[in-house]
Image (cartoon, rainbow, N blue to C red):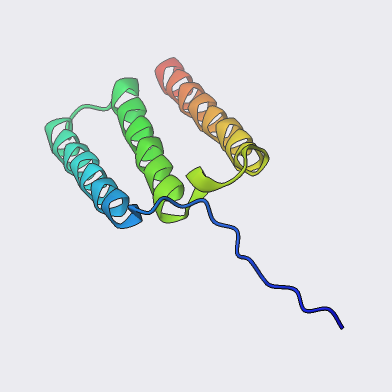
Length: 107
């Protein structure tokens, strides 16, 4: 019986700990911006407010999935398999917000 050595696939950089801390601080900054904007725009209900929160949410999700879930170190085909459906979901959410805004303005 032939003995084969198991080699684990990883392309993670050696300074992963510093990348995780940098990502933590970036996510903290975006979260603080998100909260400040929420309280500044508390009384206004507009399409721009929704767009700002959606964009900030997508940016935070990118950092969480990319660094904490190690997606930036995967092959392109796996990245596209996950990212392309998410683009369609975001597009669908944007269309629902636009349609809801139109329905609200018609009434």
